[in-house]
Length: 466
Image 1 (cartoon, rainbow, N blue to C red):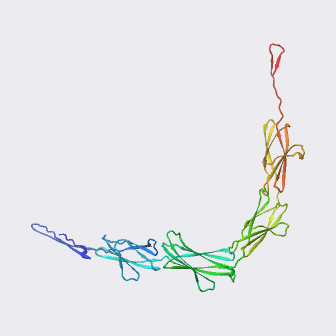
Image 2 (tube, rainbow, N blue to C red):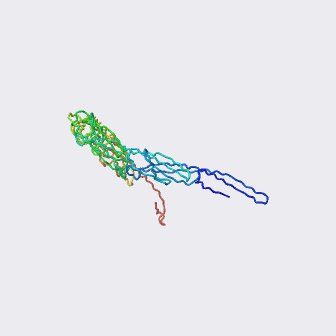
Image 3 (cartoon, rainbow, N blue to C red):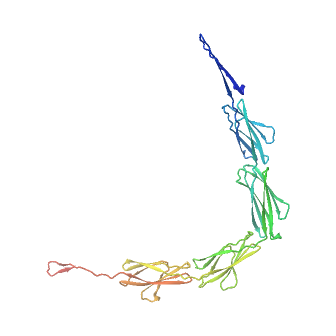
């Protein structure tokens, strides 16, 4: 006999199984009994929770619950999920699924939800409670300040409040702007802006403001202004304060650098100015450039450009030019004077070489190589002259003004023929020359013949010599 008892009738079930074995025989019989105890194991409830913004709706959150409950007996488990806010008395059942989630809208800076999971195997159950804390993303931002000067005496203070974008889209952020001056007690509100964050926004949400001040009304050298900005998202707010100091107009600083180059067309000296003037108030500046020439006492205005160029003559000795730069911001001026020395011109150095080629029939071509140079890197001009040896200086004739010309002639003397060549190099201010003698050699003709003697015809005295 086998007896089955359902374990759901008892938490601790004792089975008594009696096995009667009857051995039927003619002379004897026997039987046996045995007791077996079976113990149910209680399931273990376990879960974890994660939180995220749901659908990017303002202050809307979703709690995701992942069930990790286990049962040692491998029984099928049944679940019930409960929730309540911290401080509430009643639990609210919201799901019987294994894994689930629930949504809610945050209304405070921080909210705590208690979540309870009950795991049941049909006989016994286990439960676990966890606290889940959700905090509002407090809007954080920073302030930048800058200044522009639309006209002399007027200062425009530009303020930029830039908030880092949170995960909540369509979330209105409200900027409230206040200001006060030094020694004042009350803050004065001067601007309120509400900005709705959209999914198309970048990483920041920005609001800007600007205030105009007339520094001509200032009684002291400087004036400190305090700015306070409060950023609110409807639950929390974040506040920052910054200061900005206005000054009465300050004179600009006149500064300049220069370099000296040469005009390749005229070989005049070019003084190129680089204006490095600045203004502590960042006012726009205008400029006046003056020069006092050597041996003069008066300054002459030569430019109102920012970075002008002054053209000066080449001199045979060292000379100095006095420069005066005046920088103006419309209210005050700053100036600076400095000397610029111009070195005297260095004459060029003439140098050349040549090659000769024979073209036949006493025709020659001379090719010239120009190796002239100029210490000042001036543009050079050239003049090439030629005459025969033993002719006077006045016999020189100019045959080219190219840099590297060639000259062809027919040799009329043997075996050598000599020419004097002179190169004159000029930089428009001075010149130098180099003369040298060239020669060509064609050699003398060499006379040579041989002969043969033969009889002509049958006449005994007729001969032919070839």
